[in-house]
Length: 631
Ligand code: CUK
Ligand code: CUA
Image 1 (cartoon, helix red, strand yellow):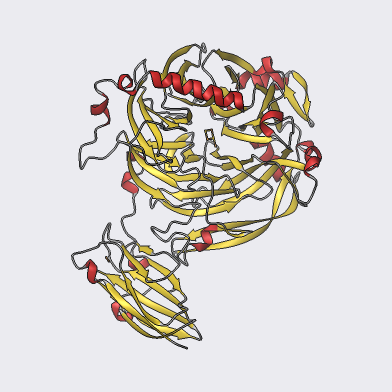
Image 2 (cartoon, rainbow, N blue to C red; image 1 turned 30 degrees about the vertical axis):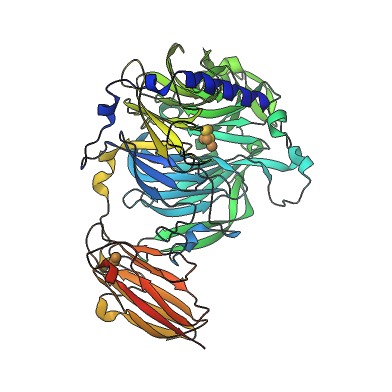
């Protein structure tokens, strides 16, 4: 750890010497300038890390367009506070209002982005979410049982057949109360294959493959010739359970885990798996009822490699691999050992040849280990220090982030020669080329998502904005164009051409198709209905009044539900709703939508409520009073 820290500091200081002034060349400004009223050419979806959300930027400007609430409550629009969305954050341990969001993957058809859905992982409570790209709304959150630290996720197969989730922190399966020192016997990681419905996108766990106790870190699906395979990087194959950094890095090599998911699918169909009890929440948002429901499921299908020959192989990979990236042709598998001084590149055809020829060097808990040289295409020598992640430009080049030496290194897939390097400010984690993990990357831009910001922006106290950097990669030499601050702590990101989704955007919801249980179809239908101590207020919002706006006959201890229907049928006219002293945040109601805010007043009094979104010249008048009387 200390060595790492020292190396980081040294790397950063050397970067600082190449001062920012020399880093940007003359025409950078014109390359990123998007004139007022003009659109960016690219949507950039960026993971929020410890803020649990996903943010959307335009490229090349770096302008923040939206924060999509996914795994954390969002008072700004009531996500997780409204009655309709609370269920999205449900788990088998109740509502969990936060998570750690690291990776994103855009849905694909034949290995190319199709602009339908964006998948997001949650690291802490293992979850995977699906976001609809016509509404930028989270539609589904699926909890992953038998797993912890869902890091190697949510990477998808070439036709979005599966979203994959791999365990970072091995845990006991079934009965959890075991001595930690029984790690080698009782702890396991799992690779979950989550099926995705072709038409609706609906997810569910198809099967889980049980692996020995170790840490699955990252993964990517094969493509083209390697379509049937999925590749994971792993570390801690020493199976240490304490002082992880020290014990887990003893071995010279960990593994790339190669899973033939087509075979796994066949085994699952052939009944080779075992159904075991495992409960998990499956939360779905229904567009018709405009409400989320949470279903608890109680069983998963487990596949044990022991019962499924030829399904999994290990490829040795030096020094705690992190990134595991597959080139656009599907032939090359890049493993990045974060403590290694080289980048091993494996060949898919050599790997299958080695399997056919049984070129093994033993086994890891019964899983055959392919000989390193037998699967190796070659090594990139002296690429820099601390290789983490690799993306591709579709022109035969790979770009690897170097955390320790704080740079992006461009190298050739064919002869593995380093072609160019540029500094990052500072200590880059993930990098991203639009479509850079698909069959058809866009070779124009690269974005580095950096871990340390230091002096790049105006200081803001001890916590600084995270920094992203945009590079032009269209020429032989990479050129830094722009720094832009980001939200939370970005890890992986995705980006696509704006034209892929821009014209599919929903502008408002058709009020006539509103199937909400408590919709109010017009001001005349506005009403207050009492049942016992439950009070349902059927309220409408349209410029510029809330109806009803004077509500009496409510008593201390009543459960009051404001069901607010936004009657507008026009783009970009949401109304808001908030009431004094309510711990349940506010609502933002899109045109044609109904959303519910619960309020349980515990004191008598007059409670003003009002629209929070400045919607018209008479916005300030859009308000009313609730009178709460003693019981
Ligand atoms: S990880 Cu963050 S730099 Cu969670 Cu994908 Cu590599
Ligand atoms: Cu509606 Cu302000």
